[in-house]
Image (cartoon, rainbow, N blue to C red):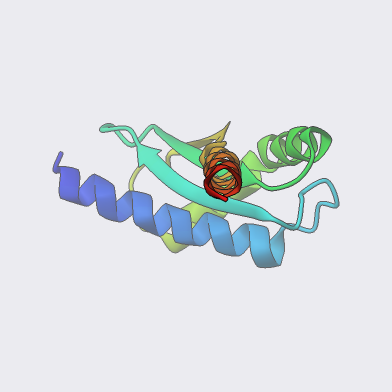
Length: 121
């Protein structure tokens, strides 16, 4: 199967799941700052690994991931309605901490710059 096709399917699933989280999933366990960062679909289209970024506390992250796992059947059904495929990939959610890591590194760089400015004076 072509990697271009997998990339298009992954991008389409990313859009669909983002819209579902934003508008259709009414679970109070899902944090308001939940973002789909990436989707990887296996070559045989049996699984879609969905990377989720949740800004908030560790408790919010855990509850959001539990809510998404419990809604995976609904999400798969909606993907099947909106994407015409013979086999609908099973969504598997994975927590993506890259945004939090980027914020942490940015703060470290800012603190180093402040220290350098104090030492120059």
